[in-house]
Length: 334
Ligand code: TRP
Image (cartoon, helix red, strand yellow):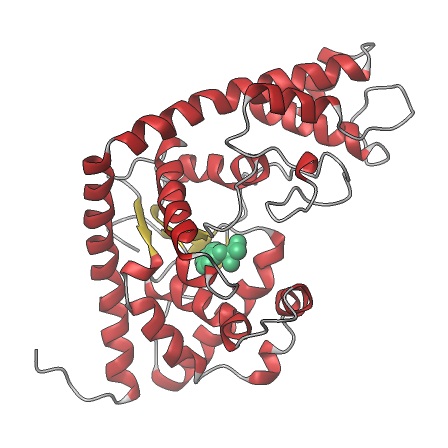
């Protein structure tokens, strides 16, 4: 708890181009959580280097992501928006927690298996230890809740295990975090393969709408979206392509999928695709403009980066010092 509010932690990587899936599935909901929770939203640049990055691109994207958080409507005075690499406690706690995590439990992490298959030429120790750094992120802020996608649930589970193990040995130290389940964001699927999640690492750019795509590109990608031959607009699992289009439409329009079905009943797929394209473009257009405006205001963004890193550091160091003391590191004189 901070004051009378529960603490919420989440993070995103600045690698790849963020997609409509990241926005409708996560970022959009992050905004609404800032009233109820004390939120820490991190740009997890340290996680990004588990895969080789071009330095200039990483730096540029990390800044663009932080700006996107603000452009999406997160008030940086209210929620703490910062870079993981600016708060050294993350890496320090991760090392300590590494020593309380077993190879056996890490060997079960499915994301490591997937990622090492994908990056067979660079299966580094950081990639293996990735979930422990994520545990450090969460535990440093004594987070009560963590909104994550299902692909990250296993990492949250190991975070809880590590925290409980530590608490059992040293006494109450960490809050045990829960996955945030509440109003969950829409799960947006690929436009080219509606069985697959829309992903920033998809090789086929037509499957994803990138947040910086222009209107023509957006409309064109929706026109090409894979549907089916049922010729009937219904919201059901047997028609995953149409279901996805209806999910996207309703998330952008602030309606339920059922309302969207009604709106389009008796109309053709072409009309639905065109309408979804328009509403997505209308949704992303103000976001893109706001990103451009904020990017131009270097002094303002720099001040947010500085102030929020200081705020994050204060909370993070409080936990780190407690941990260091408990495990027997020498007392700090300064
Ligand atoms: N691993 C998460 C992802 O790729 C990002 C992340 C890093 C994160 N640290 C976190 C998410 C802590 C929630 C909490 O999506």
